[in-house]
Length: 319
Image 1 (spheres, rainbow, N blue to C red):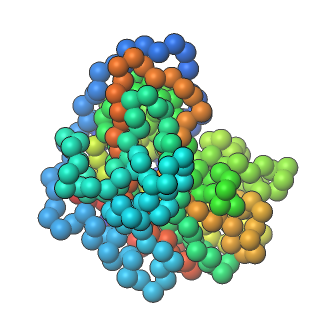
Image 2 (spheres, helix red, strand yellow):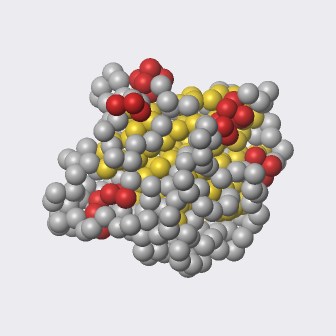
């Protein structure tokens, strides 16, 4: 197990990152031919037999578990699908028959060639915590075709903590066209809050809501590499302290956001982050000519309550 501390700047697999905060932006304009699919910035470790889901299995057996969603079950995905179809059409699980060349044992997220966003999101319920802390962890994997010169994408509202269940509120973003993104990386990770200081849903230690700031470090998503996220909402006075850590197969966990003060929207008693979404949504509409489908994977969502601290649970993902 590897643990994380607060750092001033994260280093990618092959290049050092700038410590400047990434900006929210969206590529627009006339479609153009997609750029080449770049190679990963460094080799990814070989698979470890029996290891990909060991972390998930260890967490889901804890006494403080609220919910555990492997996302490796089509019936589960269909149950929580939200969109025009009655099933999860573009979020699927059929590992044995998956034709993708670099398939993963996880829910397959496919953005069709003629789309920029998921039509059918997956929305996982967050059970009530009884006013205690909430920790949510999950893994995501990105095909190299998501790289912005090929995909035309500027950013994604990627992983959403809805409050109430029907409204976006606290989102983990992927900024594909961030000026801080190193060559060969897919995106920079940021967070957006839909709260407002005037509504007193953002606390005095928050300097900006988009991206949520201050950000203690940066993290670039590497292609074809499992990335693990940990989000922690901890009650503190009239606020929830929000923290975010990220790691991948080659890098130890990094603390990106440290105890920023937020509140939920329209609280349901003491609990108000009610759903976690695989959203994969952008406000832009640019599709380069000949782009093709975009493929990613997600797996192993675990929700825990009443943790005192997250660092003892921080561990790199494996495949």
